[in-house]
Image (cartoon, rainbow, N blue to C red):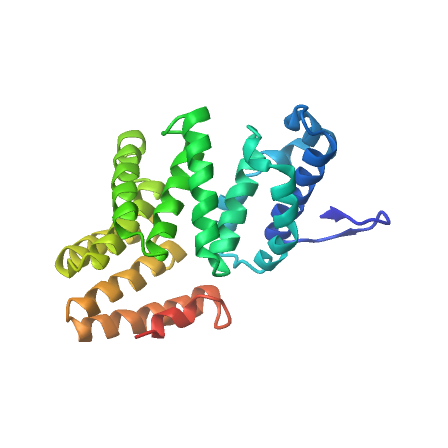
Length: 265
């Protein structure tokens, strides 16, 4: 529930909670610039909201990004508040959310610019193996690939993958995501055989780690089908795409933003 302006109560979904927390963070940063943001935010939000594992909850609930467009309203305020310089975890997560918004809505250059700045700052202040540094590095690898900087993307993905493997091992979502990035790098390099071998490994790992109907597994299946097509295994790719599309509709619904991806050729 969330208190309305006039004191009423209503149910809100987790995405709206995350967005509203981000709004409060920006307001606190503007009001108490130069002071402890953690202390400021705690005056405005109950402690459970500050530590709420929003991304994990959203993934488990299979929620789409219905509120992404609202980040357009936050973007100029985030720049003005200079959120990047804050050391608190929540403003850092806000910055990552803004990167994700920019990428989802097609501004890949700006998403990559923010990602590069955030990665440099996090590496300097928290070290290369901090969870947020690894998350930003993983996303930046994809963003660099999207703007055609393939060599930089491949180099960053390999370096981040090695760190994740060292810190968390293979059975970890961050490591899993980076292997997916490396598959994309291999396809960009024209090594379709290696890409297919790796994407198949990722697909089987996803089924083992998450189950056959988890969104991560469905995305791994979609990526493996792309590799199969590029390697010339068209019939196998079509069969996998059809099964993935059926599962996505069952799990996420026909109107979800992603299901149609499995019909792409």
